Length: 219
Image: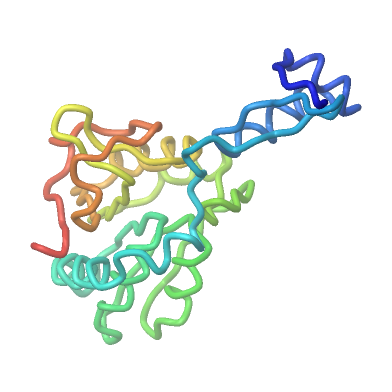
């Protein structure tokens, strides 16, 4: 009969012939626990699954598109805007008139791909280490580069907005970028669909009143 129990991280790493750092990194990708089954160490996902960009693309699509149109109405010709990561931001880009002369600053691959196809848009892509779960890049050099940019309007995404706990997201690697952009931009707008209202995600990044406006499909 298989034995079921728990292991210390160092013991599990030794059983798998990997370093503790490697095991810690792999487990950090989701809500995972270690189990010992019949002498084999197994990583089991908990009830909460990790954020996946691909998994979110087909969720609340109509609401995200409507929210994107609401946000696009705030963008003016000649603006330098920051467009955050996530699955709502592509709807913002899709709703922007193609004749607008814009500078778009971003750090997400899906956003950069769409922005690069616009005929009158200058694209500034922040580089660094790629994070597959959100298709974003992050590096110290990119964070320093943000300080030299003039951003008129920042459109920020979130996995949750709570009146007391503020704006939060699922990925901790997004927090430094969001906070640095909000400190740099003249105005910051939170762009979410209404399903995010009242939700709290693990990575807090700003109080609710830090935004000029919260934009949803309802206005």
